[in-house]
Image (cartoon, rainbow, N blue to C red):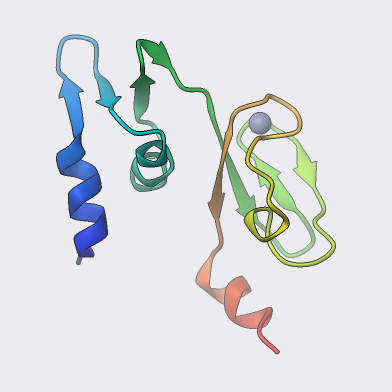
Length: 105
Ligand SMILES: [Zn+2]
């Protein structure tokens, strides 16, 4: 089931069926939309936004541009990281529930 916030995110993005690209009016929509649909092509102010998906594993975060990064404490967003250090894409975090639970004190 989707939260109200997710439903708003979908409504605020316009899908262009010809190009297969979502147009967003607000940059904050990029992260929400990309998290929902990892393959989404997202355009903001006429430019395709480069995104990079970071998934937490046992030891490190694996990136969709085929790299690994170790965050010593917390998540990339908790360390105010917004962009992938390798490809420069907007960083989209994915924390599998099992790993998230394990990290709790
Ligand atoms: Zn990357």
